[in-house]
Length: 352
Ligand SMILES: [Zn+2]
Image (cartoon, rainbow, N blue to C red; front, side):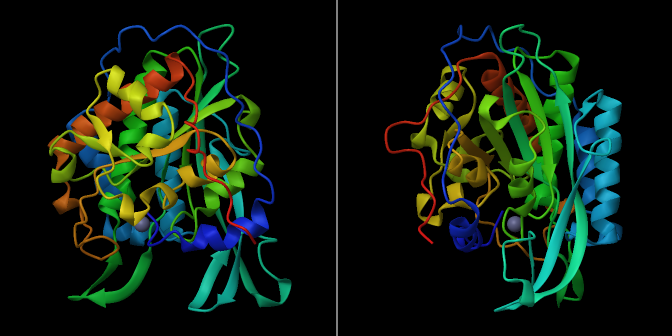
């Protein structure tokens, strides 16, 4: 989860001069009964978050060896679940980043997003991408993107003697939930294809997702929805507690309503003043016109973006139930009617 929505706002005028795509798909039959969701056990979720948030992975900062280790681990899980590789080298989609001298020190950007003379270096990282192809002859060429970011803040200023910003909740929890849904879909594919997109560069301004939109695994013109998962490792009392998630920008499209109709424990974001709709990877898809939201249960805990965002503070009973909700939500999108924006719900790029 981004600290604020400022980075994409700054980039918006340069990157998205015109929003396009995302035309409403033709109506499709209502979903069948939602089958059981997550196919990953609580102990496996614990293992995934434990690996990603270990001190040895050094906070998964984009461009670091720790991030590369995390990416290899995630690709191995995708392979073991039977996802079809959809990067440019197996599951890896190489992302080129530039390091620039910004107002607050060194910052990471995508090439072309800054003036050349401020570039002081280059780094590489990857997005990790796998696909579960759909089963319906007429719908399998359509895609739902299910995503989470695996990067976090890396090594930083020590707090109480701890300098590793582990990011167990932000967003190892979301990655684990997405992988649980991916495994469920691989075991029993949906009607549409599902692109499982685990990105780098989110904390620097949703950069990995911006890169993906220029090089999508399946065409954006056939991408009917994007669902991101961010910070689902602890229950939020304002969402109703254990097992319940909130959806950013709930009222903007029909996506949240479709989850409610399917009986999922998903409610509107109770804190719209924090603009969470603009603070995760979904905003990149939304600005392209594709209905895109984020599921979360971030309850404003004080470990946000601190070294204390540790695996010991994850509530794995909650995360297991959250993973089940994510799995079912992905299936609602991949089997049911494509979501559409409500009038005025689609965001427009900020003016340059
Ligand atoms: Zn974050």
